[in-house]
Image (cartoon, rainbow, N blue to C red; front, top):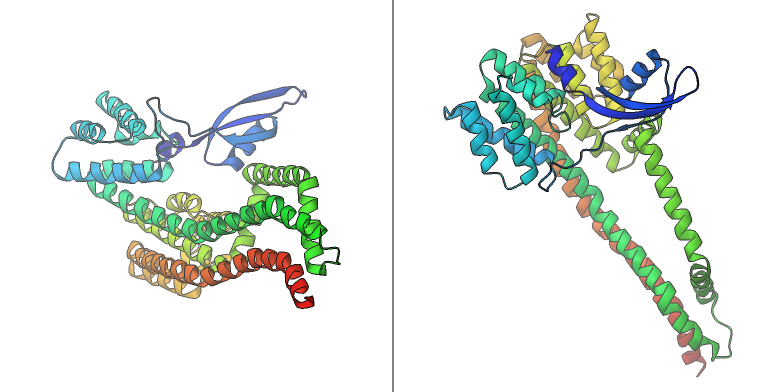
Length: 406
C-alpha cells in the first residue's frame, strides 16, 4: 500500500531561496507541510512560503464536498453489491449525480479504470478529493476481493466524521452569528440613532447623566475614527488568518488553547477521540497494518495536538510498544478509552472495540452540542439585552431626569 499512499499525497506550492540566495518556487507532493519543509531542506532550499494547492473547481461548475464523496462511496458500494460491473457502476453513478463537478470527477476516474488502472490507482490521481486513507482502504478492498465491503466502510466513516464536523460547526456558528448581528445593530445605533438624540439633548440646556455622556462620546469616536478601527480590525483578522494557515506552531497553539477552553474544549476533545477511534477501526478492520493505519489516523483527528500525539503513538508501536501503553504515554486519552483499547488488543478485536469507543464519543458529542445550545441561548439573550438595552437606557435617562424635575 505504500505506492498508493505516495500517490495520495497532497500538492503543495512553495517559495524560498536556494543555497546561492536565489529565489525559487515550485510544487511538491507530500503528506503534510512538515514533510515538504523536510524535503526542501534536503534540497538546500529555505522555504519562505508553503501552501496547499487550492481545491479549485472542475470545469462545468460546482464544488466537490466531503459529503459528495461519502454519497459516491455509498452508491458505488450498493452498485457493486448488486453485481453491476465497476465501469458500468461508474456510468450509472456519474450520470445520476446533480453536481456537474462531481460528474466530471467520476467520469475521469472511470476513464482510467477502463484504461486498465486499478481503482485505487485511478483515485490516487485526484488527491484533493480522495485522501491517503480512502486510497489505502480501496486498495485493501481490491486485494482482498471485498471492494464493496470496504466502500461501505468508507461511506460510513465519511458520513460519521462529517456529522461530527457539522455538530461542532453548529455549536460555534449559532452564537457567533447572533453576536455578529448584535455588533452590527450596535454600530448602526451608534452611527445613526445616537447622533439624533445628541442633537435633541443640545437644546435641553442641562447636564447629561454620566452614562449618557459616555455613550455619546463613544458614538462620536466611532463616527470620527470608525474607519481607523475598521482597518485595524481587518488587518488583525487578516494577519491572524494568514499565520493560522501558514504557521504550524500557531495552529498547534490555537488547537491546544481550544482543548483547554471551558465548555467548548471538552466537545473538541471528544470529537478528536471519536475521529481517532473511528478511523482506527475502519483501517484495522480493512487489514491495514497498525503502524501504517496510525499514519492515516493522525491526519484524521482534526486537531494538531492529537495529530502529534498519534504520530508519537505510531513511533512507539513501531518499536514494539503496545498500543495501550503508547496511548497512555501521550496523556491525551481518558482512562476508559485506554482500557477499552487494551481489551481489544488482548482479545484480538481492536477494530470492534475502537468502533464502540467511536460510537460512544459520537453520541456524547451530539448530547454535548445539544446541551451547549440550550446553555448558550440565555447567555446570548443576556448579551443582546445588555448591549441594546444599555443604549436605550442611556438615551432615555436625560428624558426621565427632565420629567422628574417637571
